[in-house]
Image 1: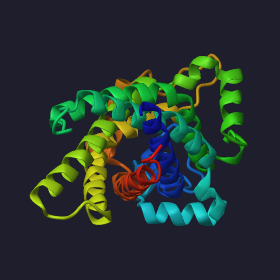
Image 2: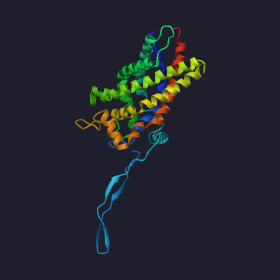
Image 3: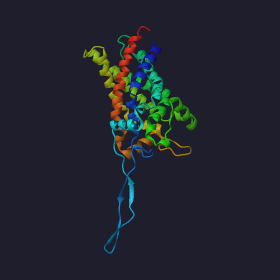
Image 4: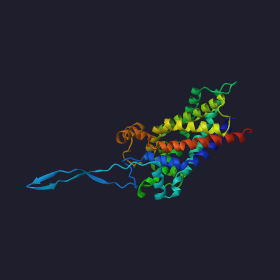
Amino acid sequence: MGLKGFVEGGIASIVAGASTHPLDLIKVRLQLHGESHIPNPAVQASFRPSLTLTSTAGNISVPAAATFSAAKPPSVGPISIGVRIVQTEGVAALFSGVSATMLRQTLYSTTRMGLYDILKQKWSDPETHTLPLFQKITAGFISGGVGAAVGNPADVAMVRMQADGRLPIDQRRNYKSVVDAITQMSKQEGIASLWRGSALTVNRAMIVTAAQLATYDQIKEVVLEKGVMKDGIGTHVTASFTAGFVAAVASNPVDVIKTRVMNMKVEAGGIPPYSGALDCAMKTVKKEGPMALYKGFIPTVSRQGPFTVVLFVTLEQVRKVLKDF
């Protein structure tokens, strides 16, 4: 019974991950927008005089040396980011890193979905087969954390592959596949680089899984108990979309920091842009303001909504197919 939960969750997660990958890529690009240590080839640096001093000789004013400061990069949105990707990198670029997404879903989501199912069955009331909300949240925290630890290498590879196109050509990593990405990272940066940002990944996964799975189960139970809708596609879509929105709101700040820490390029013997998650958060807020932690929120919701809907609708259908096994 336990193994079936892993299979069902894995199939549903892979289908959902592959179908919503372009939205996830746009979210990553938005979250990285504004970092000062990474050049953006699409936005040429422009300069403007910030101070002009004049010296007067008789009636003639002579401009002194002017100082210049870099103009702040223009704000961007998900649509402009998507259009820019297609224009500069081609339509296929929207699926950059899809192999890493597939591997990530295979490792991370299969583990978290299967483990959550086991914990839910073990803790459920034997008569009513229901679970209090706080226990659902606890099951989500545990299963999400374990799944994230297992899938972190694929997560790092996915972020880097998705972000590669925004770098100047001579700075791109040009990974051919998720296997190539993991291999290059291991050789050039050490095995430990595969778990870079793992604490953030685990924290985010715990939040997402608890919010997503617990909310879905709770909304579905309430809807069925109140007789608002019958157990069908309508109930599944309503519960899953709500779960996706809750997960997006709860996880976006951690997701922004995770993306930036994973994507940072550390030269041999060089000083990393961020010393850790807290340093990244402080520098981001100081330079770009508190709302920078919600960069990519629209594509996050746009991705989490469809992802969660596809995930749970597919999961319910897979369960029907495998119910006799």
